[in-house]
Each structure stands twice: as C-alpha cells, then as structure tokens.
Image (cartoon, rainbow, N blue to C red; front, side, top):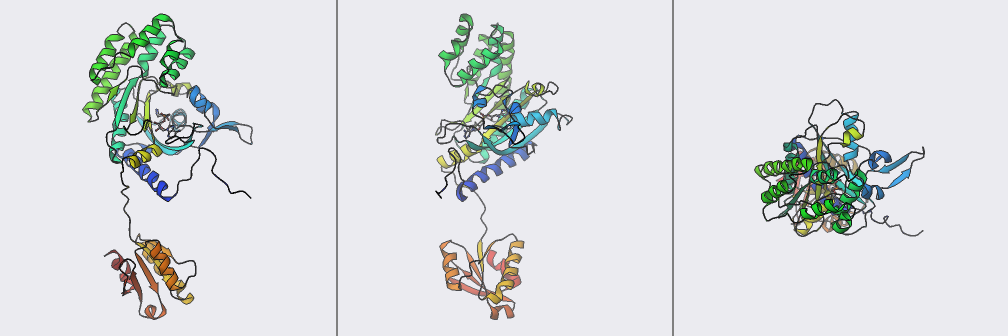
Length: 423
Ligand code: HAM
C-alpha cells in the first residue's frame, strides 16, 4: 500500500496548530458572548440551490458540489450566511428582532492553495438580522475590532465601502442585474478596465471618477462620494449611509483606515456597507462582511434587513504567528501516574481519577513499562511530576511524588496529593 497524503488544499492541524486555532475560536466565542450573539450549529452539507442562490459566480464555481446517494445535488458550505438566512425564513422566523446569531466551523472552497488560502478553512460568523440602521452595521465592525484586539493583533486596518453606491449608479444608468454582478465581480478583483468595459460610456466615466475620490482623510473621502453621486438618488442615499456608519464606528472607538469608493466584494448578496480587515504583513483579508437586505426574501421569507461578518480564523492564527504573538493558554501542571507493579494498577488508576476530578491533567502509564523507563519517558516529554504508586506506601495511604525537573521526591498522603502538586 502507498502511504496516504491529504487531498490537495486540505490540511492536518497537528497539536500546536490545533491549539492556535482553538485559541482563536475561544476568543471568537468570548466576543459573541460580549455582544449578545447566540451560537447556532448548521450542517456542513446544504442544498446546492441554497448556497448558490446569491453567492455569485466566483463562489459558485468553487463549491464542492456532488450528488448524494438520494440523487440530491448538495454542496459543502462555502460560508455560513446562506444557512443562517435559511434559518431566518424557517425555525428562527418568529424570533424577536434583532436576531443576533453566531456560528463557528469549517467551510470549503476550491481556491488555489497558498499561504493563508486553503480549501478547508475555519470561520466565525456573526449575523444581526432585522435592523436596517447604521448602528447594526457599526456593531458588526466594532465586534470585529474587539476580536482583533482580543487576539492581540497590532496595526490591523479596516477598509470600508458601500455596494449601494455602486449599484445605485449602475441601476440609474439602466445596467441590468446580471451585468451589474459581472461588473462588481471584476471590480472585486481590481480588474477595473475589464469591469468598466461592460457598461455604457457615460456610466463608465462615472465609475472611473470614483477611483479618483480617495483622499487622505476617511471623512473627506465619504463627503466627496456624497457630492460626486448627488445626481444618483439611490447612490446618494447610500453614500449618506456610509458616512453615518463611519461616524458611529469612529465614535465607538474603532478607527477606519480607508474608505474605498470603488471597493466591491466577491459575494453577490451585498446591498449596503461592505468592509474587510487586514494586517500590513499579509495581503489577504482576515475578515470581511457587509449588509445584505434582500437575501432573506430571496429565500422566501419576509423582506428582512441584515448585516454580518465572517472572520478567517486560520488567517487570524497565521497573522498572530506573523506578529510573534504567543498563545496565552493557561497550562496546568502535567502529571504522570505510574504503578510500581501490576498489583498497584487499580489503586494507581483510582488516584489518577481523583487528581483529574480536581481538574488536573493526568496521564496514566499504559505501556506497561518498568519504573525507570516510564520516568525517562516522562522526562523526555517534559512532564512536571510523576506519582509513583508502590505497595509499601499504599499501606500508609501515601505515594511518592517526584518532581521531574528538580529530580527530587517526597512521600505525600494521597488526599493531600493534588495540593502538594499545585503548591
Ligand atoms: P468572505 O470574505 O468570503 O465573506 O470570507 C470571510 C473571510 O474568510 C475572509 O476575509 C478570509 O479571512 C477567510 N477566507 C476566505 N477564503 C479563504 C480561504 N480560501 N482560506 C482561508 N481563509 C479564507 C464571507 O464568507 C461572508 N459570508 C461574510 C458575511 C457574513 N457577510 C455577511 N455576513
């Protein structure tokens, strides 16, 4: 038999990587708690139609799609938003608004594998459903800011834009929805020439002009957009909305680094503000999101405004590594329990259980090794203590506690053992 490797783009997370990811997941859960988002768990496999509906060409082409044995066309979720919008039209339909929900888990996209880009990766996803107010959008950005702070990242920067400005211009210039989607897909990739070639002359000039509006100050850029699109009523309302969100986020204590008038994102369901967050050391986004006011009605629900974000947890872990941020996991003492002879196995196991009941991490000698070998192994693996369970000591309700680093040992009464290890 050949030895097996992982499928291209799929990774094993060995203990250190798994610990790093779990640390980020823990911070995302804490953030959800701080902002009142309740966690829900949705399936990895969903109907293809649901995931494809409004995700856009880019994502559609990268989905892991297949027929299950019941001949249903299904796919591995490439994100959480579609699943959560499905719930907003079904089981969570009658929940009081706003509905704040949070999910964390693996998602799948057939992206070209490279550093920070995988085919199986992890997201924490936050959605706030039922509010069309700028404070809901601001909350999504602020909680992302809180997560970046919680993991200790430095110099991260938010980029903010508004799809309503772009769609407002395109709609008023009679560009149909399908062409609009194609234009925005290309703008997302910064292929402006190709994007603008798809629209009529006048519209092209307007879009090109957007690229020149950026100024050093984010507030000035937002004001310039408002003036620039004054003749496009929907775009103008969107630009005002962008400024309102920018003000709230800033007052909430989060600085926005850039306002990008021509910023677009790959997903097709966005209708309002969109944003991404970066660190200078990596040119890939650590998270991104935006407002999607029409998705829930596309799925057959009542028209319901919504806004949200997904954080790329693998990328956040990578960013932490890039900035040399150590994991702050609280590590209890590591203890191994070794019976001297077979006759003490039962008693030794009982002692191990008693220590674990106090919350201590305990490994039991399961290789049947002689004492010297067992201690040598514990040393190699940098365990802190060995508890040696021998016949003579047991008769006195004691064990030998060996400090492996210091190479010292004492005899300790069994019901004082946990205390002795911790002290
Ligand atoms: P997205 O921008 O497609 O948005 O993905 C969010 C984040 O997932 C990205 O910013 C990035 O950190 C991470 N990510 C994307 N692709 C990969 C990959 N191939 N490997 C590693 N990480 C990756 C969404 O998924 C939307 N559902 C966000 C949202 C929620 N919008 C509204 N609500």
